[in-house]
Image 1 (tube, rainbow, N blue to C red):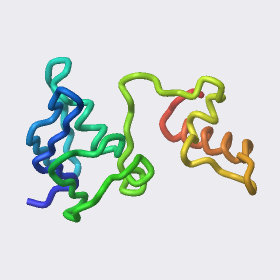
Image 2: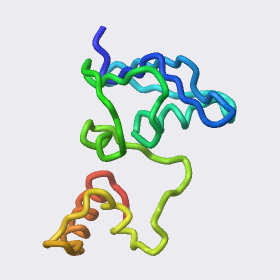
Image 3: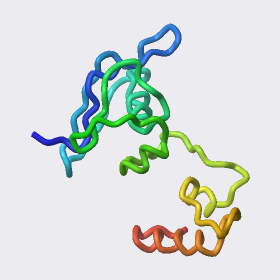
Image 4: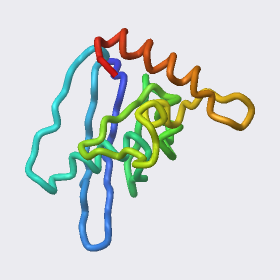
Length: 132
């Protein structure tokens, strides 16, 4: 069986607690999964490892059969992994447009290209039927 995402034997420790203990998650292409469990069960920690926010003490991640090191969210994005956080993680002094393009900012030299960013947000809004 070929999996698009494999998290194999993942272990993650924080001071005084083991959040993930030898966890394996294998996801087939096109499938939909839900992680269910009580508060503190390690669901968010596991997804934060996949997204590169945390590094595991043990285990490995494979994407499309190839072992990868997801060292930060930029690497995750390059691998096609995105994350919708359970709590808002917006930059409060940014506009809606700036928050949406954060990490993929169109630039003119060193400056954010606001018209290009706004155009991209409009295109995404129309594509997904969102009124932004």
